[in-house]
Image (tube, rainbow, N blue to C red):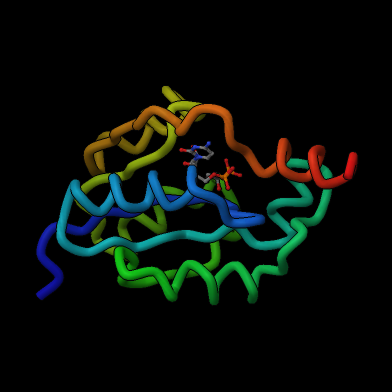
Length: 132
Ligand code: C2G
């Protein structure tokens, strides 16, 4: 019995504290946390570059977290509804950089947008490291 199922999505490239903050807060919305991890190909389509860490590395990192119960690869942003139904999710949690973008799944589950952790992002880390 999984209890209340929470689903969230992301790339989680160059894993940082903003990522763990949203995953831990997402878990508080239910009993079982499922994470859809963007495939390398989806990342290329979304951000026009491949992630620093491959999808297999990102899966390994996310799966190892205590708050995460299950992971899968997210192949397309348009498949959100399919994933929500496939995993019987009760609530979708996303960071507030996505506010409003996934309201269209509200017929299938609750949708919650949580504030992002300020002053940390993968892009910023890459820029800082480049300058060293
Ligand atoms: N995040 C956060 N605080 C930060 C950075 C990220 O709360 N400082 C959150 C984002 O809001 C997101 C999650 O961490 O909910 C993963 O962030 P990204 O890896 O940047 O995910 P993204 O590429 O936006 O992919 O289907 C949706 C997409 O797959 C989301």
